[in-house]
Each structure stands twice: as C-alpha cells, then as structure tokens.
Image (cartoon, rainbow, N blue to C red; front, side, top):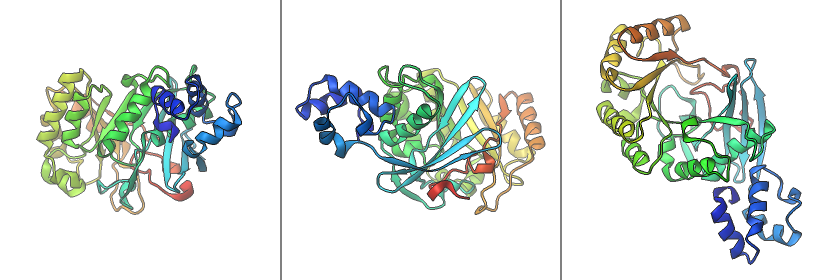
Length: 341
C-alpha cells in the first residue's frame, strides 16, 4: 500500500514504474491528504492507472461523538477488517489514539480489544491512515498539521507488531511527512520485555507506557496472561534500560479494579517497586466493558490512592475518563462493525 512507503521509497516505486521521480512527491502529498486517487489533479490519467492497484482504500463505517467532545471512528480497511480510533481534544491540541492490530491476543481480563482474539497485524500505512484521517478531518495539511500528539493505546499490543509499528513511527516522524516529534508519542505495552530492549537499541525515544495493573506477579497473572511469560522485575529492568538509553520518564498504567488491585496492601507494594525510579503512575478507574464482570473504583477512591502514592514518594495522577459513553475510553476499543454498541 502506498501509505506504507516513505518519500524515498515512493520515489523508488515511481521510478520503477518508468515515471519521473518528481511524481512521487505529488503522489505522496495527495496520499497524506487522503485524497481519492482520481482527485489528485497533478497526476496524469496514465500514471493513476499504474498506481491504482497499490493506492489505499477505506470506508468510515461510523463516526461517534461523545458528550465530552471525544470522537471515535470505525474504519473499514480494504480487506474488510475494522479498526477503531479516537480523537481527544484538549486546550493544548489534539491527540489521536490509534490501533495497531485488528483485535489482540494478549487476553487481559478487563479489556474489550481482546474479546475476539487477534485477527491480524495492521501495516504501518494502516496505522498512519488513522492519524491522517483525523488530521484531514480537522483541516490539517502536511505543512500545517493539526494533530499534536499520538498514543498507541488502541486495539492491539504495539510491541507484538514490532516491525510495522516502528515503521509507522519512522513514517509519522519523518520531516517530509507529518514530522511529529517522538516526544509527543506514547507507546503502551503490557510488557513484551525483549522488544522493550529492542525499541531502545533501535534508537526510538517515544514515551514508554507500561500496562502494569498489579504490584506483584501472582495477582498480575490472574488478570494479565502476559505475566506468565515475564515477571514484573524483568519488565522493570527493561524499563531501567530504556530510561538509561533515552532519558525518558517511564509511565505505568494502573487500572483500578474494585476489590482486586485497589487495596491498601496493593498500593503499598506498588510504591515499593517503583520508589527511586524516574516514573509516573496513571491511575485509571476501570472503564466498563459489558462482557467483563470487573468493576472500577469510584473516582473519589482513585484520588485517595493517588494521594497515598504521592505521600509514599511516587508521582501519580488520576486519568480523566473521556469518551466512555461511546465506548472510546481506555480498554473499550475493539474491532466492531460500525462501532455500534
């Protein structure tokens, strides 16, 4: 697909078709504006016929708007797969939450994305498409980008789709592309330890966010199957390596599940394993997923836990819950036709 290509790769592609190199820039700009191929007026009919088979296609099945201003789209890709993406608007700018897989195989007990398992990985261009959609929707261009931040926290485990995700990062950060700074990108992982090391060694410096959700291995195994493969101590060692390599503060996501991981003992254990590290804890009162039987704590309880962690020397805040009424909040995204509830 055209969107999988960098500008240099697109130049090679165009020259391989027997066309002049400068046509690649025209094709690249049109694609990044998500223009229909036939609407790119700078390209000839014969050229369009050559690239038609490699051009992208998609369909917006649903575009939902929350009462809090959050927006979610369900996008049907060329093979019929459906992915959901979310636009979060703040005073400082616009953040897009993108999916990296169709479904997920990690099996976390509280997450909707894993309900139907993993169907396939998204390509780098299909991940990029989600960002380009909202950039164009907001009236942005290549030169005047409207998207300020990107979070890889939608459907799927980003580090389980390592090659496509890192290619996406290179594409979206390229100076001749959207030119998003890695400092404005967060990547959330449940803790695939080898690929945390690889991400650091491959020169990336995005904000690494760990979906932790438990302070010890025994409890974590009951809600996150990945805990059977990697111990918390192994994850923390990988995080230390990433921090030493990049200098970027590590974030830990902790979904508060009533009666499961919200006890005073759990919070004390959490503080002990994180004390002394340059990190921050995002506390998330669990968002509802009707197929799951777990309940979130009240926001009052969440704020009390944040205060307790801060007194114990760990930076912590309670994340705002945005888009819950359209199933667009943390843990609620899935591959669902039309985004219907």
